[in-house]
Length: 145
Image (cartoon, rainbow, N blue to C red; front, side, top):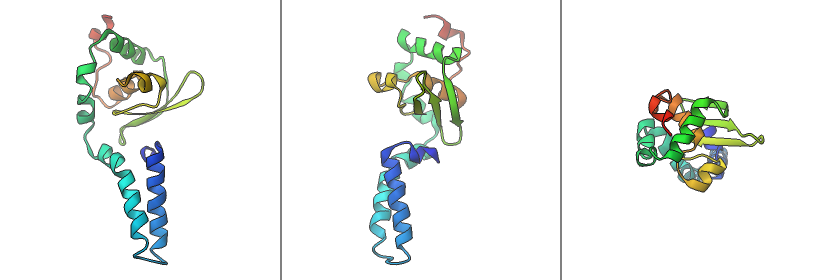
């Protein structure tokens, strides 16, 4: 469920759905607008949950073989990060950064500065992919940087 709370869009979507559901008791037709708006805002998260993890991770295939990416993979292997929560069912994780910040991670994106700057998988995404059995981080290929 935390995937819906991870973005402003998701939070607003849930807010409008709840307001619409509450409004059903006083004005059934008037409650359709907030419910509809809420569902529209939630569509990206719903699509993410409904799409198999393999499909999301396959989008990154072209960006996994650079030396910079192999370094990120090594950092994920070495345990140089602190997962606070990994939710295999919902394909996401929360990590605690070195300065105490929390990073919300999916197979599509991460809120960490590295992903925000580069737009390619970060060590958090590699860790999540490994937890979802999409990437074998024990491969010796990753040792050759």
